[in-house]
Image 1 (cartoon, helix red, strand yellow):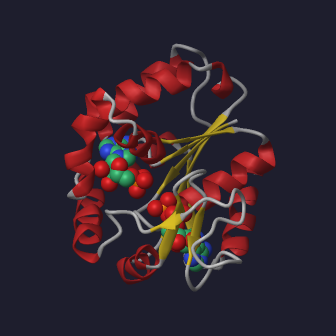
Image 2 (cartoon, rainbow, N blue to C red):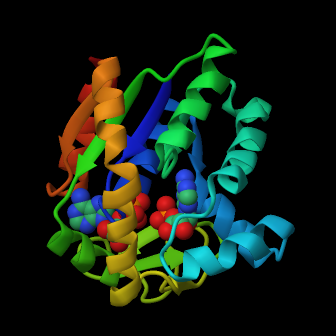
Length: 214
Ligand code: ADP
Ligand code: AMP
C-alpha cells in the first residue's frame, strides 16, 4: 500500500501518518523529518535546507527529490509506505509518479486532511516535538504524561523553530501557493479522498482507516 498525506502545515498529517504506518506496518516517510535530521547533522543537504526552513519557505525541488529518492530506493519502503509532507509542488508530484510508475508501484490513495487556518495556528503554537524520536504532542489536545518529556523514549520535547506565528503564516502561504494545485492533480487521477481534520485524532484515524480500506 502506498499512501500520500496532503494538507496544510499543522493539519495532523504527521500524527495520522505515524499511526497508519504503525497499524499497517508501512514505512513512514516524512521529508520534514528527513530535512530536520540533515540540518541537525550539518550535512550538505542540511546546510542548503536550513535557511528555507527557518523562514517557512519550501526547500528547492531538486534538494527534496534527492532526499526522497534515496529513501524510496531503500528496502524499508518496498513493502509499502506513507508519504507525509511530500509531494508539495507539482514538479515533485510528477517526478514521484515517474519514479513509482517505472517500478510498477503507483500511489494508491491521497488523503487530504482538511483544516482551517485558525485551527492550524492553534495546533502549531501548542505543538511539542521530541528531539530524539520525532514523536509529536500538543500541550492541550495531546499532552505528554510528564511535562517536556517524551512518553515513548524519554527524549526532550521542544518547540520547532518554524512553529512561531510569523513563520506559520509564511508556511501557510507556501502551502496555498505551491501545494494547493496538487488537489486538482490527484482529483483528476481519481485517487484523492478528503478527510475532516478538525475532528479529534481518533475520529480522524477512523476516517483514515476507512479511506485506505475502501
Ligand atoms: P502536520 O504533520 O500536518 O504538520 P501534526 O501531526 O504535527 O501536523 O499536528 C500538529 C499539531 O496538532 C500537533 O501538536 C498535534 O499533536 C496536534 N494534532 C494533530 N491532530 C490533531 C487533532 N485531530 N486534533 C487536535 N490536535 C491535533
Ligand atoms: P514539515 O515537517 O512537513 O512541516 O516541513 C517542515 C519544513 O521542511 C517545510 O516548511 C519546508 O521548509 C521543508 N519541507 C518539508 N517537506 C518539503 C517538501 N516536500 N518540499 C519542500 N520543502 C519541504
